[in-house]
Amino acid sequence: MSVRVTSQRESRPIKLLLVDDDPIFRLGLSTALQAFSDFQVVAQADSSALALTQLSQEIPDIVILEPKILDGWQLCQQIHQDYLNLSLFLLSATSDTEQLLAARSSGVSGYSPKGTEISELVEILRQIYVGEKQWQALDAIALNNTPIRRKNWLVRTYQSGLEQIETTITQINSQLNTPGLSMLDWLFLSGRKRELLTSRWLLEQLLPSETIVIQEPSVKKNILKTSAETFRLPSLLPAIAPANLDSQRSPSLVVLDNILAKIKLGIENKTNLPLEIDILQADKKQELFYLILTRFRKILEELRLLNVIYEELPEKRSLVLRSLLESSLLDFLSNYYTLIDLNNAKIINIFSLDSIVIQEEILEPIPMVVDLLGYFLLENSLVIDNVPYRPESPETMARAEILLENLIHKIANAVMQVILNNFSEVEIIKQTLYNDRYLSSREIARFRNDISWQYRQDKYLEEPKNIFESKHRLFILNGGSLKTIYIYASRQDELTRLRGIPWLTTIAFELRDALSPRLRSIVSFLGKIAVYLLTQVIGRAIGLIGRGIIQGVGNTLQDTRYGKNSDRGK
Image 1 (spheres, rainbow, N blue to C red):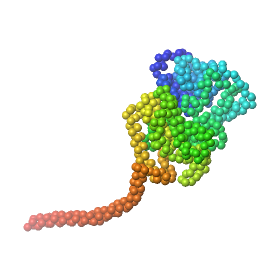
Image 2: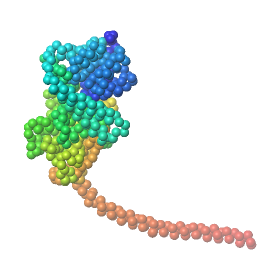
Image 3: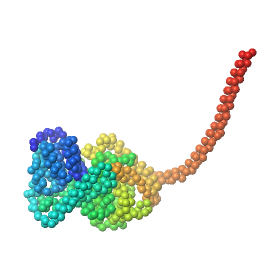
Image 4: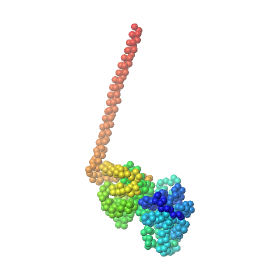
């Protein structure tokens, strides 16, 4: 392959096509690459067919390919045959040395395992762009590892399991492409596919290749990480792998899968309320929600290890919410530490300055957190409209989804509040995270004022009204949109604790409710009297007077006419 001149790369970014069947991994990789101005992800594909379609529309500089997708190795050959000058780079969890060696001999430009540090990966891609080959990862495996033979029966067992999984994934992919597929069927099939991908990942970790297990190289320990750690955007698949292998999954895992599927559809604000997350680009909203959902699951695992019982949850509520917010904030900003001169300690110090306000305005008002934790940790039942439902019932699972979606939304707003309070004018944050309409200082100031006004309205009007009416306003994900719903809840204790303006608000509502029927009755009675006077008294009087005037005019005309005739007769 001919070496490109460096000036070409300086004049425009290196165009990349990402081909991988894991949407979360693609999101993480594209997010990480956005921090480097000399790279641009121009297209993404989750299948060989879609990748070829993307190539027919625009030819990138480098194709980053996961060859383990369906027909992935055939796609490598076809791209190399049809696009001779196109660089092909394998970023894969595979460690099949025979296939990798065959790919290198066929002209593929390079290979790295998933989990390679982003800084190292970026440098590899730059070298590939100028025409170099990058196969150091494969060379390290070949030079520094000793093959360990597996027993034949174990190899056959793993191979059989992988073949069954691949066959089932192929069938599900075919069903997902069926025209007119209902949303319910799509969610079911997508969840089943995630389970199979998780199972495949686990089997490959236990037996990476057909006949050997590659030991981790001592000189490359930082490269061979699990895909869950890739680019600091954790994939939920490895995180939930052990539980998903159970054929009878718990209801709480089904709820997590359902929320994950909803996040994939998008998070467009349809509430008509200004929210902190509105300032984010669409994919950044999804990334933030993914991170919070992942962190929530990790916190659940930590609480299980501590053998926390339900009676301890009320006192741990604030700690859990604060931990969820801090860890999500650190994860979300981790890609920008070097760009804005930050580290974990600085982030925690910055968060501490805002923690009191965030605790009072966002975290404390989140409803039914203890019940939600009890459901996910201990599989407790949930009380809906004063009726307890079993954990596996559709009503309970639907309510758990609603509560967790609202919790994730609130934490996401809190994360953005910290960023807006401390980094709203940092240019790299604006360019990387914000929606285009919020790049100017004026629009950012207007946006923050709208948010501030909305908090005052909620604090002094909306929330007291909801407490008085015994209901909670929750934010939920629905068909790619963020919407609001209201659920019943006894809030008598909160009502008795209201003071100041919120208390006066409830008094005003109570006074309105007390006077409104009486005022309506009085107005109705006065209205009837007014109608009677206008129609029966004044109207008739006007009618009589008008009729008298008309008759008088008529008589006058008649007399005048006859008087003139009599004069003529004389």
